[in-house]
Image 1: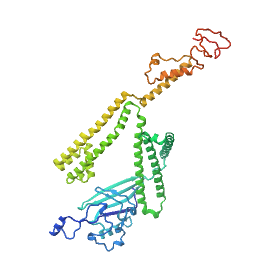
Image 2 (image 1 turned 45 degrees about the vertical axis):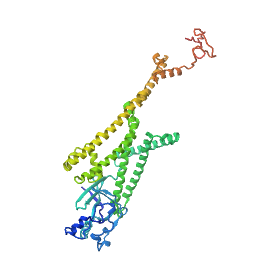
Image 3 (image 1 turned 90 degrees about the horizontal axis):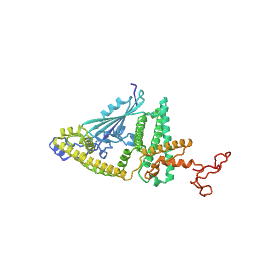
Image 4 (image 1 turned 135 degrees about the horizontal axis):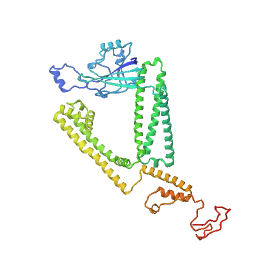
Length: 502
């Protein structure tokens, strides 16, 4: 389908040093069951990694110094990243051979001839990059062959598809996406400036003295800034990759791998930022009474839940060690403490395949182990979490009854009602009618706030152009409310016009 291999294919092996054999090996050698002078080679770990290429019994190949693939290279020299296999973590160091379309037959024959792989080999890692023009994707492939001390060979394959050109700008849709991304980062700059002004106005201690939404806002802005910096670095690396000449062809696969790893990290940062944005949504959706209760309840139980998980982790780790020691000989799923922990989490979350598998291979011992774990974890510990939330929720309800507060939705509705009443009263006043206040509302002093009452009182004050207290003239003296003053027809009704006071 038109795919092409980019650069060379890299083959790298990791070797181990011999270790002291057990007493049983010496006894069997004495009886002739095992050949004399036999060496024992352990499983791979960084502590036993061999950096000096030798054969069994420390024999050095005669042509070792003439073959580059028998010279150890560090991770900095190879440029390769470490990889997880099925049984171990393997660093980017080792003994390296590069193959391409022109020399692969000759090089592979040389590896067979020199017995490059032997009993000291614990892992062979093959790295290469393939480009698919139809999908416009660069595919990074890592094939790991793990060789166990018993001679078993197992393989793990990691495939990563990378779209190097994130901004092709080949269609209107690409331009729209790029414009939206620029708009988002402009908004982030605006929010950052608002945070700076708010901090300068309130002070750092007052604004960030308590754990709340301000800390989430700042974290969101900082993650956006880090994401923008990553995008700049990735774009720069991509442009340098496009500008590379033929003399840099050997470095191209590794540069693509590094760029793909950087882009993957950028995507993970963006994913974390998206998570923060969704959490931040609660800042604006806490409008109803029920949602407000839930948010307050979660906030009050955070420290108790943290203490619970500390206790839970200790108990879970104890069960993981117990499961590893008890069942490692029967099931590969318990071959390590980490693997045992994963099996326990699967059983806790209700994986239906765990219980039958453990009972089938471990019998009654496996049944009793899982039963104890489920009783302790699900029946006791999980119920403690439920009890903590129930107690906090009850406390929130009781506090609401003692000192009720307004939710965001209630404040919004009150504001809408106030503005509606003000608009309605302005219309009534424009028609020459005097706004009034219902007696029952005016006498109800227990109401915390009544928008209709406040609006009518305020508008009644504003519409009196020349307001003065009742029965008091301009000189401050009381007047007869029933007195009639002569009216000048030519003067009209105004500030100095005589009117009958009622």
